[in-house]
Length: 61
Ligand SMILES: [Zn+2]
Image (cartoon, rainbow, N blue to C red):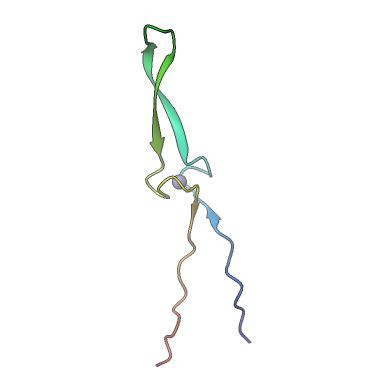
């Protein structure tokens, strides 16, 4: 029996789905805006989900 449906993507355990976060640098600029940088989760490259481990396809030669 073959199941061709792709498994759903898994939520990244490192960022719990919040792959992009704004980090405050402290202080505000002259316009009063909070200075932030955007960081992406290195585990999922900002996707928020990780691909499940590949099952070996075509293993039977
Ligand atoms: Zn992540």
